[in-house]
Image (tube, rainbow, N blue to C red; front, side, top):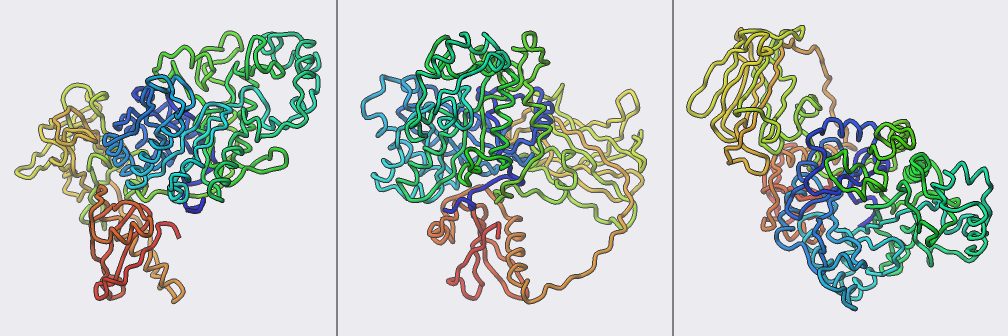
Length: 624
């Protein structure tokens, strides 16, 4: 599998962050704040944690709606030895249905604390064997598994062992590598920087500017003595990868094993406040502990490198290094009481406000907001990220969770004159709802002013009810109590007899439990709208565009039939042979230029064949 075939977010700049260290607390109580921060910082990749059963799905769906690529780690305390099993498979399947495709199933297995019992001598063999089990599950479901990241600076080689077991196909066909390249206060160039190579001394002015005794924990003379003593003119990333450039060493192992690169992503790492390679006269006293400002500046330079604005030692970011998701967005401020993480200086923290004159965030936050993006690659975007036209038009006024509730919008039967158009819909889940489960409706005139006593219809299979909006004391909302599950109710405006768009599929229930009578509510806003005066000309494709037009017709037909994955289906063998992943639709038929076709959508493309020659199967990718 080529590097440019792996999914990427639109306008990918490689800029990311490790999200909450909790599998349950991710900022849902204040999501609008976190959403705004992510968008403003132009983040395109986010590492999230999951309990192995789908606990991160709500966050992942929000990220996908923002065109941010989630990377999911299945977190299990002391997960070694072990694999994700059937529970993990089902979680992977649900994530892929949401358009989430990258997964980590292990974490730093070279550390004793990641084992339930004492780490055995053959621990790497066990890790590789369980990785193969997990990788097969994820690849079968249409995802991309990570060869696990090891502890900082580790030089273990799982890739050779994967090949030794006869499973090179995993590394050739969708695996990627995670790396925890914490920078530990060392410059991006380490180990080939002047301090490490030559022992270049620090001046008094440089010592003070870096933070004085707080940052160095020793005086200038002691620092320079350490620099002289530890200088290593023969330093190489092949012998010391305890630094940002660790991805170069990992890539060396991959190429040595299979002859080509695979995607590598930082899923932990970067510069943390006060963190260096040994403190209090520890392992490496040559570099200062980063202050909030210096940690921010160094992370900024890291992100500039990742998006291609600068080089390191004369080399631009390699194509295989997809993204940097450094530790950590927040701890206390996102609802996780974890003092060790708070002390490491997450991006949003009050930990250093008094000492360094900050206001709840590191300078890095504003630096990223100010840093223009440089697009490294645009997609290919997972096909599940596709949005129906009405969702694209409404944007954030269409709650992205409605997709997973089965809520849809039907057009007005006649838009040649005035009609009622949906302009906003919001869903309130079991944590957000107040009181009983209601459908609330507000109706606006052409000027956007709310109308009192405007009528709307709430219909179900066996009956319909007419309801009126209320007055100013109720903020002009009309309300209707729900007693049926999702899929029960349809809502349209009937005021003044104008035609109306209709919201369908409303009811009680949750994204992953649609048949539960869980109290939730909807708020719908309609506005009187005049028809648009647009006129488009008919453009006939020339002969050279014929194939592209056919491809577009196939893809558009496929989108209407997307369904949950099911491994057993027609066209299955063809899709397996061509590594298209699991199916996303049942078989369906469509007509193009007078010819009937049968087709079926898979994760990485659509298989099709003419109805009169079903043995002549072919496929088209979603991006081409």
